[in-house]
Amino acid sequence: MKNQYLALPGPTPVCPEALQAMAEPMFNHRGPRFAGLFQEVMENCRELFQTQEDLFILTASGTGAMEAAAVNVLKRGDRVLSAVNGAFGQRFADIAASVGAEVEIFPGDWGKALDLDKLEEALSQGTYRAITVIHCETSTAVLNDLQAIARLRDRLQPQALLLVDAISSLGAAKLPVDKWGLDVVVTGSQKVLAAPPGLAMVSFNQRAWDAHKSSDVSRYYWDFTKYKTFMEKGETPYTPAISQFLAIKAASARFVNEGLDNAVKRHQLMAAMTRAASRALGLELLVARDEEAATTVTAIFPPSGMEAAKLRAHLRETHGLIVAGGQGKLAIDIFRIGHLGIADAATVVSYIALLEKGLHELGHNVVPGAGVAAALGCQPQ
Ligand SMILES: Cc1ncc(COP(=O)(O)O)c(C=O)c1O
Image (cartoon, rainbow, N blue to C red; front, top):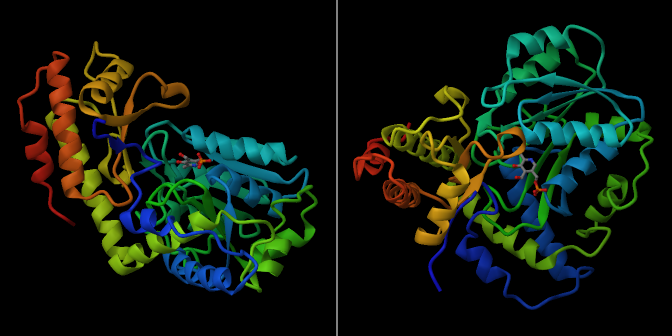
């Protein structure tokens, strides 16, 4: 079987410690072994979220956690402002609407960070119950300025809950949940944590609990009151994905050992390398401004006249390099390289080497080695 290089923005290659941990035989999820595991996972995840508030670990993909966030704090008819500068921003808006909230879209350009002046204007009008925002908009490879958005919320809509999707950023970008006053933050196991898909984490602060008391949205599986009661016993209300808990314990410990600041710097370097290499190969980046670029994924236009789908298929079939396509209205226009989780400089260099070879084979005029040289020329910040 040919080697496969999984350069997706999730699922991402799983760290060896997590793979090994998952081989453990099953055990009782209502016994001391699980309670101990639960405790350790919680401690590691609290450190990653930088929170002392409640944190729930759900057997779900990221979208399940987004829905759990909405059903636990919103009331039917609540006014919600959903910032949308990509496919996942729209998903959060759709979820809020699905529980009966009155959603207003704050639109942004796909490929640019949310415009803070326009957001300030929008937040100066009306009163919102909640604001949904995507930290790293994976569909466009943009990192929104969450700290600035949290400050605007504090100043202009202090009553509004800030619901944050950090599914592809937590661990790879600065995100001190308590310090920035983020009420609900969700992430998923298959992204920066480098564990398999299947678990999602949600931080939930006191303001979120206050809203939870008056929330009238119907819910059963996602009711956080039940999660909290069981959490106090070191359990989850329903059978958890035990093997994934073992994986997340190993994967989160790896992150804690590396240190959050180091992990963020590593991801920043990988993004800089991928961007520099793309430019050296004559490729245009969707996100023009470096300071708005995601640290976990890079969105790239193929050379003019070459279809992204054709390039992706060639990279997959000839070189085993799996890159993602676009999403939503950019579905056919771009391809995306994920550089997150356990990826490091050597990983990125190998992706770039295969990319430039593939481009050359498809007739794009590249100087062999130009991308790799540009990537290697990047220094850690
Ligand atoms: C920013 C963001 N939000 C939500 C999701 C959806 O997560 P999942 O596919 O795990 O449900 C993703 C997955 O790519 C994402 O990157």
